[in-house]
Length: 548
Image (cartoon, rainbow, N blue to C red; front, side, top):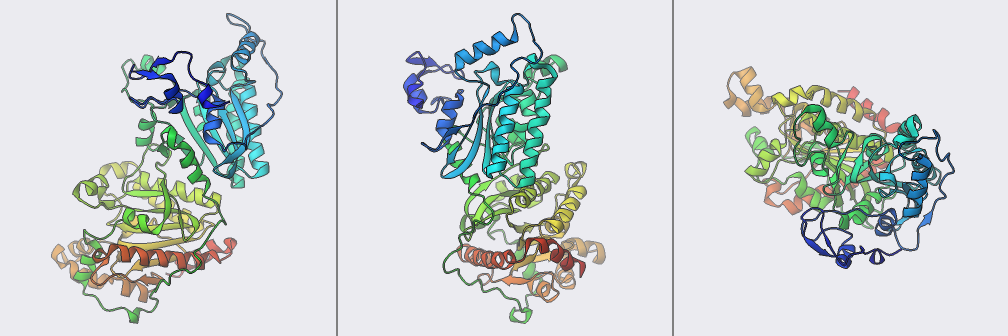
């Protein structure tokens, strides 16, 4: 059925958000998004499938046969009668439609919920359909896309409905074990037992603008706590700020965004036919001696390219993924999926900022615990999908504030060190500017560690060392010389594996040239470490750090 044939009964309708009048056919052409306020209206499962999947590729999965009414439930009318009416009114067997198909040429299984069918509630039939769809994805090794729209568990099925939460969650766990990519799209509303099970367990969790998502409903919470909640409470934007979802994506961009995620495939490298020579320096004697004060000046120069500058030149199709899925996000530490030299990777790094306003907003690249937890989440995703990890390190250190300590800064860093040492995929780290102490190391336990010629890497800042040991912060150059923090000394001591050349007097003099050097260096190093058998990566990495 075409979206264009599903126009509302009235030619002109009133938007449920801004109350403005919308021409019905235009509303359908705009995927039922108000052109005035951007409010996203509900789509049926068929409309959603037509919007997302490639024409001519969709095949419905047979709905599973389940008991119609396990409890013989009766309220104002028998539950069986409610079910029959829902089926007559919607033409659906259940609150979810499951299909196979392709999205931008990628084979997928999709389970799409329809709120019209008893509020999209999760009962035995819906739970069985979603589980069967996931099992089809497991059997065929197709990515699984789940689109949710639900008021929660179906009360009329009692504890049988409750058990669907466990059943659907465990099958997503099986997809994790098998390395099958899962993408969840949360639409308005997604509540209760659906939100507290399969809806929020995807590798990538996207929400439409304004979608309301949560466990308990707003009215229940307000009645319980006795006061009003903020207007944006439980909205997609509210969840994004708190690190619970990866992105808020408008309906018109959903297909292309999911398509970009589906491009993330292990072993799908398409390297350049004639890769550029990296020109990596592996002999410290080939590097000039740099005065300690110049090491500090170059590494910290405010014009030095930031991570986002490098990503624009080094990667193709970077898609940022946000949040630690626990309750926070950190603007100082960025992560996501991209392609480098035709190879899908997870890329992580620190963003210092290009001006004072951005530096303040980014905490001067000093990550909070939620930043390190976000990095850990994305590294686990890399391990699941078999993707290399690339990190760009440029930070004075982990954030030293009270909130960071309350959030468990030391614990978050320690967990990353342990995680990275055992990650079963290649890791390449590049010190692009400052490598400040444990906050930097938390992204640098790697198979290969590179550094720009103008970078520095140290256990403590030169000023901190000077203040503690010389009792004089002005002795920072003397401390820098004693700590041997420059690229030449780091290479000589074997702390780094190679040095990436940069323009004379700093990467800030020619950021594009510096980015091209970085791209070539990462591509060459990725090809090198990708040749190491996966079962040997962690052992070699542990031996590397054992020797220090």
